[in-house]
Image (cartoon, rainbow, N blue to C red; front, side):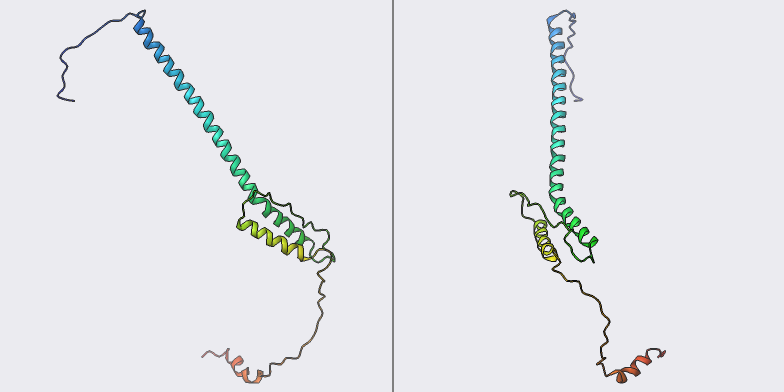
Length: 157
């Protein structure tokens, strides 16, 4: 504050061997030790928390990726075996999810995919359709009525 002016100064000389000086040094060393211990403790707790957070992210990601990976693998097997007489080489089995797993849109999707795949084929129940050439009579008998419209599309009007 600019208006403050001390009334007197007191200077005291204390030798290094004085107990007051030793008390200040010891207190300073204890404060430095406490600060170092707090830094180490905080670093350990922070590192542990980071590892736990990464593990939780990994577990959650695995929970969501496993069903999608199973769906992808089954899809690849179905596409890879397309056109063969029997689809018996395809592994449709899926492990049951744990009872404690939450019900999400993904679990509903996997359930429906599982139903579709188990009914899809399997033991040759889906018969292959052989393509045959057949001719049909054209029953569109208005071709003469629309011929003028067809040929008029080339006009520049």
